[in-house]
Length: 290
Image 1 (tube, rainbow, N blue to C red):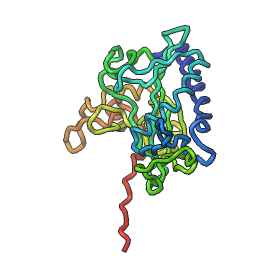
Image 2: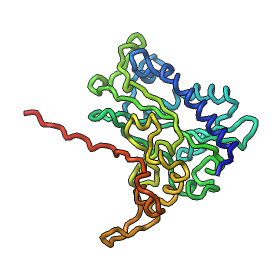
Image 3: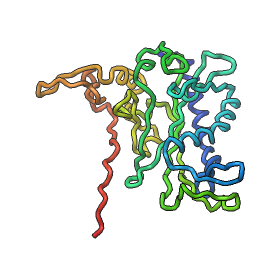
Image 4: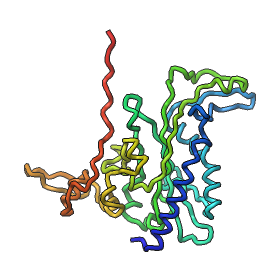
């Protein structure tokens, strides 16, 4: 439980972070909403286009934004501690220069709009609900113990993929052709929220213990997650106990609790407190042209 002074520090960091993301689009985007990164350049000044693979795009976006993140940290008197291992949480730890007891976790998240339903994105994970989340003093797969962070934030980017028909990954260009190269992504939207604000009540992946995000873009931008009406303490309680509690259904069957509305019933609360969120819509079937 945070003190009032700690809550004030967290709210101030959130305000600073949200102010920071307002200007990021101009740093990575051209006036016509294309990514300013066009490809890789070798020593012979050949340019090779970037793959639209999400892992590649995500990593390059992180590298592209890092100088700005350093500027933000310096301005507000923080130092950045990078995750020591690739699978560590969080991506960045902001530690106050004058008081190391003030720490904030920041994960960088990127996702793309669904081509057949652009009101939704592909979603992303919000960290593990495993060892370091349940045991908040644990050092396993986390830079500092979870309880040492005064807040857990996501800085996110939602983008559109370019039509792959215009991108030839086998082709190289020279510097004089730079402006003619089609960017693999564009049309960026940024957001900064505490991770509980954009969390869903289902896992982000079927084979790992990761917290899933909501996927409707407008709700992400407004922090309108499943726990909106409940708050962070309920988010913590639900995900610490995810899949560990069983309940008996009206038909007599016993089932593990993996939905917030069922968890609220188990805790003796009104299930309608769970903010109703649409899961990622089913992809539309392609119509065969006759």
